[in-house]
Length: 173
Image (cartoon, rainbow, N blue to C red):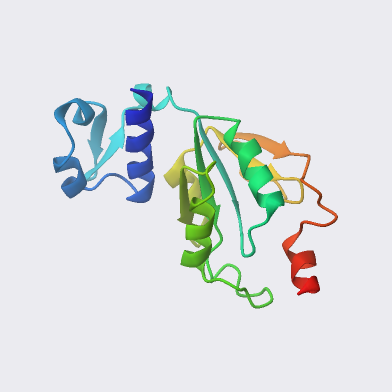
């Protein structure tokens, strides 16, 4: 049952509410776990509470062990880890990135601790509202946001932060 709920929550987040087309292909026992709102389908609140959703985010241009460690620690805070990858538009003020937003999303989603990676929307609060996390995990070097929208957890320890920062890795290349 837990795996079914996780899968439905992932579908809900991916599609910003499960589409009627996807809903029509679901087995009846799974449809019973959903309710309709504005033509989309969502996991019923009572069912949704059975899964602890954790959200975290970042640019993730050069994936390194520090990222993997932080994602592992974030995953340990709940049942389902959703990672928000910064959009190209959001990162446009930074130095040139090695990967575009979809490549970075795919790289993050390939990390075994990650259940779903999505590209962040322009409005960060809208992205958080789409995920509806129980916990928002911030890395040791990130500024916490979204107080009141979820439990805020800072992952204090980083895996060799003096060496494994994307900026420092790029400086050695």
